[in-house]
Length: 43
Image 1 (cartoon, rainbow, N blue to C red):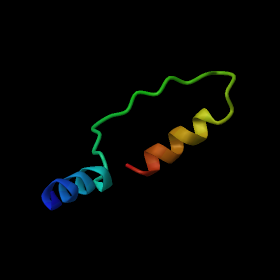
Image 2 (image 1 turned 90 degrees about the horizontal axis):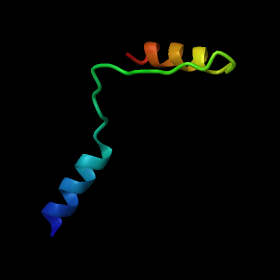
Image 3 (image 1 turned 180 degrees about the vertical axis):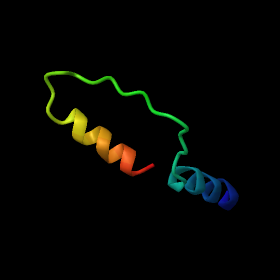
């Protein structure tokens, strides 16, 4: 039981590694560009 809990916690707390991200930008949205710049800055 402890092994299952430990494994579950490890999977939940491990950040996902994504190779790429697809963003659909709404031309009337003012926050899309800011979010895209933030994501680029995060790698």
